[in-house]
Structures are given as C-alpha cells and as structure tokens.
Length: 104
Image (cartoon, rainbow, N blue to C red; front, side, top):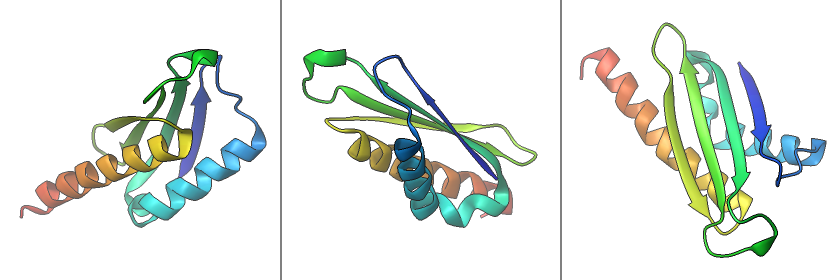
C-alpha cells in the first residue's frame, strides 16, 4: 500500500508534511489498507498568500484492488482539518463500496 502526496505551487510538500499526512492517513484509513493498492493525496491552497475561510483543500483518491478508484475532498481553514474531513468522507465511501461488494 502506497501513499502518494501531491501539492500545488502554494503548499510546501516537504518531508515533515509528508510524514504528518502519512500518519493521519494511516490513523484514519489504516483498516482499509489490505484492500487498497494506493492512496493519492492532493493538497492545495485556493487563495495562496491571501488566506480566507476554507481556502485549504484536501482531495483523496483511494485505488482499490480490482475495482474503480474512490475519491473524496474537503475544504477547511487549515491543512489538518482538510485532511481529516476528506478522510472522514472517504471512510464512508469505502465502507459503502465494501458493503456492496459483500452483498449487504
């Protein structure tokens, strides 16, 4: 299972950010790792240096083994809240997809 981090020009994708993102993804979505081949994380800042409400976006795409990818995104005032919100949304979508596969 691989976690791939992508950032726009306004977000510094340094090692500290990457390790923090990896830890948050593992914490929130770790139970799905056996069913996933990769999670792509896209972090962006809508307003650049201007700031403002909900200007950070986290978009997640989970690539399930032998199935179509599932995606979710969330906007928030800071990066960590955006990641948490996207993880919560993706968790619901993955649960739903797995339930459908099981035939519940």
